[in-house]
Length: 99
Image (cartoon, rainbow, N blue to C red; front, side, top):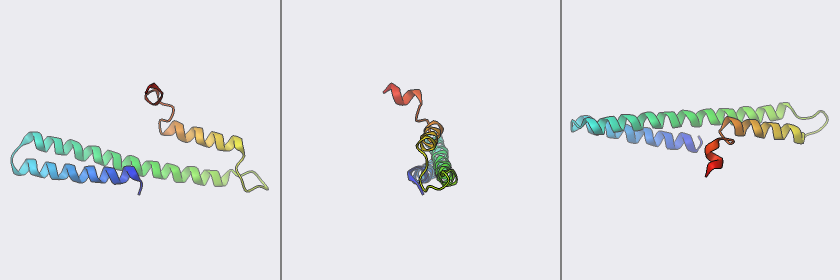
């Protein structure tokens, strides 16, 4: 499990508790807040799972594209893999450079 999966699962549980408390005390706002938090946690947990799978796929790709006769990836291949990963995870996003 990675950080996103753990945080997402925690948010999901917290949302379920809030949702249950809202139902118990008949507070629609608390129930809605819990439901939203539960969905947010579920999305974060799934994002973590996808990131983990992509990371494993990139690792596997790195193993497959080793230059013949060598045990290290060529510099060009390594740079391409890093750029693809950064692009997939928003590393080149406008928000990141705007800060």
